[in-house]
Amino acid sequence: MSFEIKYKGKKLSNEEVLIYAGCILALIAMLLPWVTFGARSANGFKLDMWIFLLPLGFSLYQLKNKQKFAKEKNIILLIELAPAIISAIGTFVFIADKQRVMFNKSVNFASTGCYIFIIACAIIGYGAYLNSKKIK
Image 1: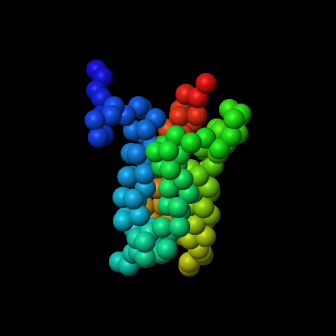
Image 2: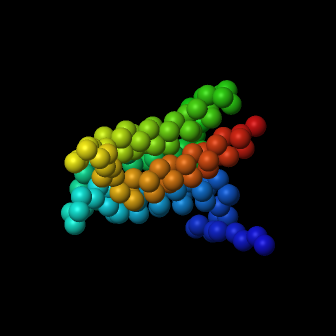
Image 3: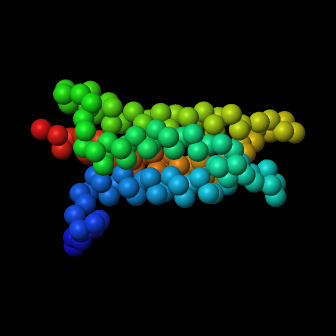
């Protein structure tokens, strides 16, 4: 069963759908709690984690403008995957930073928003990978 998604009258490819869906999921993840401590929590925007959205904006820029910054296929693949990798590594560092020892037990205060953001980065990375493979 196949279906097509159209935006402004243009049919979107699978790569475009993956990148757009990943960016929407990343925005939703920013609204979810990133740190939870008992009854207190803070979302990604309160913790200034919106900075991780900036590299993902480059993926949208690449998708919209179809401008390639290199001629060689391996370099194009690296340029298209780099934003998702940078954001995912930053999120992993954030999660590792929230690991604490309380009452002789290791506790991680990172919450669902972090993990959903990593999934969004993986989706964007896969879409960028497929998009770079499409280049002749």
